[in-house]
Image 1: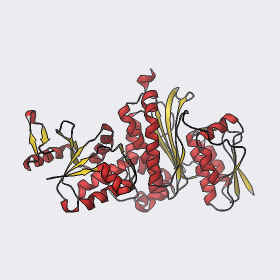
Image 2: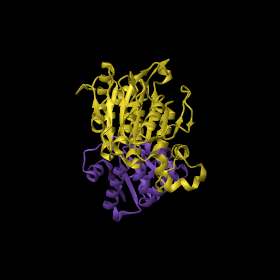
Image 3: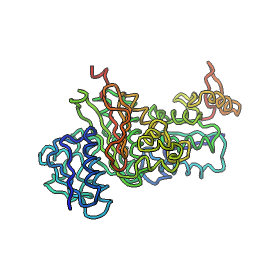
Length: 145
Length: 301
């Protein structure tokens, strides 16, 4: 099972303000702690984090949310709704930590993000769990939306 | 006894050390300070936020509020007002001279007026504000890929967070676009951030000072933070912010310079003649950060 995390909604709930930007470490910490509380029973699994509606994410928030959840809570993380601007923060933070995640493109296919040596293993794990399947040309896509 | 601190006629990052020397001399033995800007002809965002940081330091040392004589040239005074300088200055200085009130920044090159940064909420406001105004300037006037304008907001956010996370006090940020005729003959966008807090050396000393032994000082602390990405926090994710700023600035052939205490470190692009590391400068409290993103050459040509 993939646990879905609507980051924009969590941001509104966690900081109780109408922010559209994931900036500052304090905000990142609040968002991560909110995710940890809500998903406490689902630790260690597969999660899909949707950034739709998030305007800007800075390095501090990328580190505080994505990197820390990957290090401590989530085994396979699929990122969706990411713009190029989001990736400007997410990619270097993942690489800096030697971490990897999967990026769900608009057509549903999955790419690796971060440590390249790990992304193939993440894709294989999703396929093995029947959460994703290989299509023509070897591209991998999630099987259940 | 009131002691005079001359504000340079052209007040920017180049003349800041002259200002810091005057500030250091004047504040050495206590007494009330008079910041004299009556003859100032021009001030960059860096000069304006630096002047507020000096006022903050003078104010926090106790005693009477420092005095400030405002520029006499009407166009200079008008700019300082449009740039939002006096909003912050009124809280710090006893101001002498007539200050214009309530001028709009809507049609000026002031992308972000001088804005106080004290807490995380202030950084959110700054980032929200800049995204409304900066995209047109960055992509329309500087030739930066529109997709990369968000990186500018990220760099601004991280620069402001240094105050919230490390300064131990509040500070100020200002962002402006202008045509830099004298030094570059191109348009630039400048981010200036200043505080009069503890500075890099004091921030990093408890966790990193011993490792550097006798070499430890302002310059070593700046090198450790900007080049090596160290942070006072032991969390392995810390230190990403300055690294991210450095990468963004390098990608767009920009400049970052950080002054703290008696040193200044810079990532110097080919169009600038600054030194990478300056030591033994006149002491000045806190940290002052300067980011410059120039108009891209292909567009300029």
